[in-house]
Length: 319
Image (cartoon, rainbow, N blue to C red):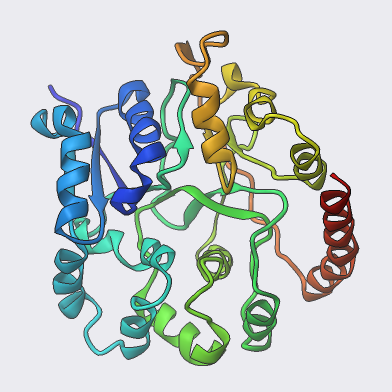
């Protein structure tokens, strides 16, 4: 009997294929479970580019591609009467990772959300998805930004989880449209700037505390940590691929190559002297419960971060 494919969703534009093609192919090729990938993109040209990039997988029935227009049409009925959600969907494209995957999912079916810059170097399995709550990757430091938006969310009465990352997320029960609609109204549209992709992180962090679940084990579900020392080393001339090469790829299920790491990863994969694929990472890694991020810790982190940013700028000028 054929094993049903696990449903994976990813949102990106055709311009991201320079890394998305490699990362998503690594997922499809290395998964020990059958997967079906649904890509939600922008316009017709993006659909064409992505279909061509994944033509072999699409012919096998492993990939489907939909446009923003397809999503908009489905959202009319799915989010009917939720004006604040309708506004939210017009914000930063990253916010659509919250609202749009459920538009293409069957009720009460597993959804695995993956960013296009997540690389899977070994044979692996996604963890078992809980019937309730959400599994998220753990990132250090957290991405709760911009500061005024985080403060407005605290003032609106929402608790948030620390160090959440949406590189990989697993859930059955989607984020409630009614809950999101209320959050947008309580926090205020003026406090959710549409230029900021990080608003997505605020919403997921608040939903994590509301819905429950836990962090995927960061020993194998690894998020790139763009530490200050790495930034300074890069500014002083260290090749970017060397920074990424320091990761222990042989023990990872995935690496979320956030920010500049995605291009560094592509540089590393283009080199011949270090193969970083072909292993096997099996076993179940139970999630850790979410840790709340109190207001006092957020304010303390802001006080420390300012001088470190200033030091980085001084080093850049001395280069």
